[in-house]
Length: 145
Image 1 (tube, helix red, strand yellow):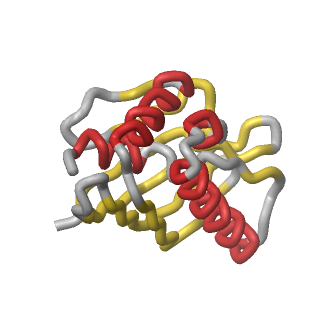
Image 2 (cartoon, rainbow, N blue to C red):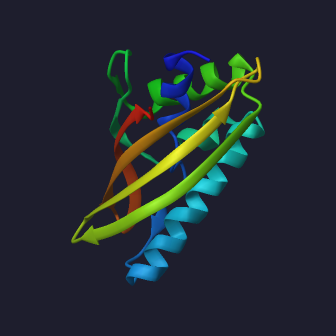
């Protein structure tokens, strides 16, 4: 599995947005549910849903790939991943915290490609509250060694 495929998977961990303000446990649970929903969208071949939770001007910083900016280009990234034949996506949510209108999530992803190979990556996601909803604004990840 190549790094472009990894990049595509990692850009959409949190394609689902969370509305309102949450206590720490509620925020963690909501972000984790978003992770699981994103994985389900990819497995269902739904690139539109995978990209829906990003801000209009979101960034994706993936290893060995050009910077991706904007929801439509991010949706195209998801479509590339789906078209590659990824057979499994598993997301683990680690630390989640917020302050004001910004929140971050740190975690890991494991993905199985069409050829059966499995790769792991680490990620940092930064969310921005827009009109009361948490939207993914910065998506940064790196392969695990």
